[in-house]
Length: 117
Image (cartoon, rainbow, N blue to C red; front, top):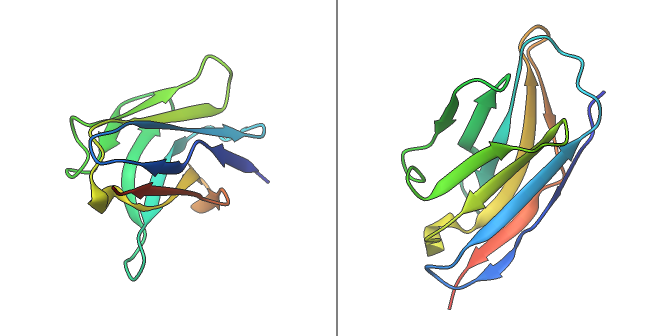
């Protein structure tokens, strides 16, 4: 079982920045990804950014050039630096770990991001 704890959400004005962080309990999977998804009211959960076993990072087109996913110096931590935020970035952001062997997803509790004046 993997437990994920997110932090860093909040209210920010358009054009502002926020950094989200996620700390996972021990990950023993051999092939897995770690990243962020988001879900806005009335919409499906969507991929924001994901890193594969410290390999390449994929970003949603809507956040490319504005968001940066990074892996922390502490094992099993991941950060999402969000710059030039737009109102359409408002959502609940969820940290995710996916085990490719079992095809199981693990989710954090979510952290709210509101971009508004």
